[in-house]
Image (tube, rainbow, N blue to C red; front, side, top):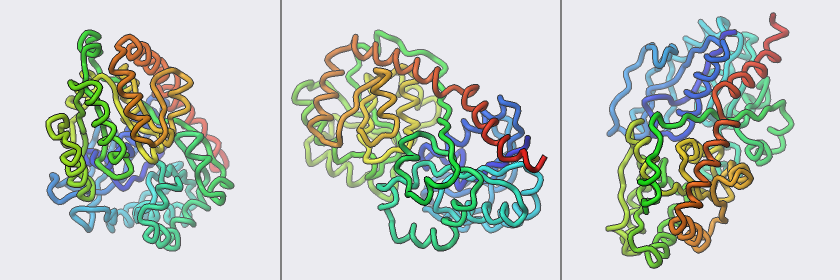
Length: 384
């Protein structure tokens, strides 16, 4: 079985968030399941200040990846014209194409090429169809739907959701399409946490893009309340700025008198990311919408307790497993949850162990790879 993955962004452009890690982990899982994988993507970075990605085809973790030159140097311009010719020439080499992300021209190009050449394709929206997400840049997204995105979804052989909550929140016309729920793959850090370091830690970690959707307007005032109860608590904000929102977060921090208690690290590399997960006391994700929450799942894999909003689609599983606390999108409730866990290291340890078990049982590469292979097989059988 040969499968082509098409995504607007891919490594090293991790500033785009969890979709990059989700695509990479999905590809690795499929390799383990005996599927031959290739990836088409673009050189798009979110900012012109980031290092340029050279176009071309190279092996990354044993997978051939082709980066096509984006027309824009920074921002959301996932337009790479060279991918059109590559898709026309090569799409029939594959049994199936898996398209990631919505609101990208490369995704629309790939779906159109598949329809014209009779190759089935699967679409993973990665949270783009959630009502909150649809409300962001709403006019732009309506134009994308008119330009071909709606047809891409309506003609897909299968819609692949990461959680049941993601499928439930999608528009009615999408839910009527054939769909499947298959989790992302989550990897644990190679080195286990030192239990003594973690027990004594007062570090609160938020990991991911600095974007309004992440709930910083809830977290910053919550931290003010936390410090009133636990003065030694500290917040680490680990992630890249998106659309200049970091300046607004820094202004909030200063307005609440929290400058000395908050650290901005910027985008972390893999080793730095693992180190941050291993030294923190807990991870917070007070997001207004989170399709899966790769950072949350990675924290659980590292044995870190999590506090998430009820808008994070993993919230129900986290609560059922006892891997963390779920709170509404309210600063006061968020502060109470943080204080409760910072004051109880034994409870944090129990939650961390529960999180590791949840990840092993539900998000392993072997399990996800088998589920994807079976889902694909049902789509390509008529072409055999």
